[in-house]
Length: 505
Image (cartoon, rainbow, N blue to C red; front, side, top):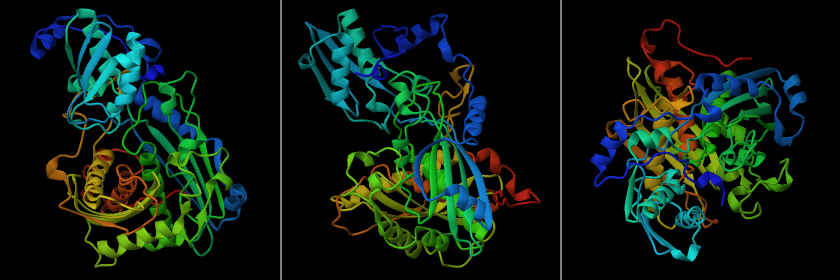
């Protein structure tokens, strides 16, 4: 079992109730050894990632000759994007109850992965796995954090040591400061346009620490396979294309977060397509359809990938890259959103993006209103989904509604920062998430009727929603969002004399 599932270690206070345990912990005076990452600083690390994407990386997918395509283009456009660490910030912090006696362990926990919890407890306590029982409680939110059984192991270990049942309860501060965080990421995209504004070359470089660094030593960056979270399997018709992964060393535990690497891929790619449309002087929705191009099905296992990609555990024959499905959801989102309606006044705008992830295709149109103080409201979002056969349409719609709200948190408010090796944020007062009052007044979800093999539904809605929100903010304010979260960039926007930000050449 990988060591990344195990507790980090620390000090436990055992008490008759939660309040007494918390007061006992407050009374402790502990000198910690902060280890090799004691100097980790988010600002410095961001600069490191940005410098990495300005240099050639390891190719993940190559087709055509991107160097020649960029050199011969009538116009070259480039832009860089950055997303910080994100925390799961699930509503209920981690908790588990364990009873260990007579060589057997029985636990109750809100775990997303009871089999991993069972195996890890057996390893940690050196028990036969047959002697470990895990009862799954209501989750209280997870988004990937509760797939890790470290907190469950803590309860089991302490129960064994004190010889009695033990309930472990993390506080919100514990949860934010000792999580398996979503990786920060830097992206640099370059494209060449011909005289008609058609994309003839595309180069995408990304740098972000790998989840694998949590489970193995000396991991210096993501694997090319991680690019298939929507970067190397993008459904665009570009003759010269190269997607690269650049080095990034992890300085904290990195873990699965809803939509995983597709989040920052979707934000960067979705935003860049909008920038290219503006550079070409074209409507972003029509430009996106042109970029998708003619219908085609691509088996990426034999089409330019440097290493075979897992394709989310499915084979490429059953789930090829299918541009027709991408086109279909974009057209549906355009039609149902009123994209072609009257132009919106300054301060209001629409944005569109599409993304393939988890074997599904999702297009999102978001309408925003940006208030003079920089507050962003989302009156309406339209989501079009092709996830193959959908057995439970109501649950699929609910997942998409939640995806839009989570994307709002990712784009507008959420950020985990490090200083001197420690997380700066502690609770919802300084780690922003979308509140109920900020939820969209209307989310229209349209499912493509299909008998195709089912794809994912819980995660594919977040990435394109991130890009669509950022693009809508540009349409409303003229301020191009290339770094998240956006709050600092929008403060006082309505009083600026110069509004507008053209992509660099």
